[in-house]
Image (cartoon, rainbow over all chains, first blue to last red; front, side, top):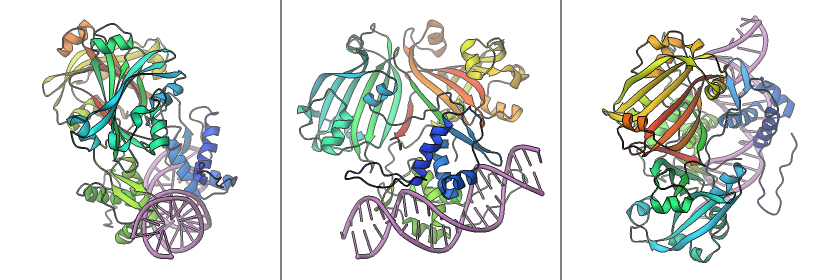
Length: 247
Length: 247
DNA sequence: AAGTGGTCTAGACCACCCA
DNA sequence: GGGTGGTCTAGACCACTTC
């Protein structure tokens, strides 16, 4: 295994062996026909000069990602790529780029308001505490995709309302405030759009939309943001793979 | 660790040590306050007389399930339970029971039809091959929750249309045909219900619904079923936790 | 019966957090 | 600097599939 385990001046992605191996195997696997058997774990270990446990770490990740499947006693095989994309936490910007669409923002409102009960509870603050509220119309390839309504605890983002809010909010939060969501609780439902929403999204009144309510959490499960996003039903869907419970 | 690793006459759930340990830790964790530190991995290993790797297997599962979180150099902690329920493959019956609702079925139609292009492609069969099509109205606590439109390759489920189709189809498939979905690809979107749908679901015409298209796959990623389920927007939502990509 | 993935061990060193 | 989780090793046995 190539031993590129250095560190530059910056905390550039450090590479564990199992992670390097995972990438190498993923590259091979994507060029192979579904159901083709991979080499045995012992073969891979010998070939890459690592222990079998390290191979298993890499394969576990690939299996969790839906790239391969394993059958005890038989072997490890290339999965058929139907979608094979498990749901992960993404910003609108990332989400659109993954769909090969150009993301864009129009700022509608930005200001400081009282939290209110629902948001306060989800953010773990008092109902009369201040939150920064930002509403934006988000576009993909120049036409409306969704409405975003973000709430952030004002105490954690001083001066945010004065920043440039037309780009990726997640990037801004990470760079300026060191706030990074590593997980989120989401609730997805279908709604009838009201007149304001349908006008902004450019669809006929009374059509349906997909509403996603998300509470973003940092590494220690402390809430960072509570966001409601309302998507056009005709342009947006959510695709993912689910697996059987192991428990 | 209690050594209950026997086998009855039937292939009753065999218990690996890491699985027993996972259950034991989960039971402890659910009685603790969020952010309480767990014992160190080395402590747990010593206390349960297993190796540290086995402890890590158990903790990995708990972390993936959102029950605990780990901070390198600091420790492992009880996660705050906001929802902490990752999406897993469930049947309607299981889904309703998890919500403390009583599931029920009304069979609308059952018969053999030609697959059609979309379903044929997703099931991996010819477009003019036969599929069993079953449509059902599903109720929760006695009132309509969703419409189900199931397609199964006729070749794999001979005689299915004559069975009792008012219970859990997943159970029936598992018992009679040894067909068990272990993963599924899902597409979620919002739709405007048509007149037939809204009448059956008991909601005003023109309201919105949540439509889930699912292709169920067996252990070897071979398609078993293609199902469209249309839920009432006012009674149903999807809740789950997402995490940041490790890659 | 041979070979596969699944589990488990005992030990080691590293990167990171915190007092 | 001491303790934590993160990684890695070399070896072993088991359960299962396949021939």
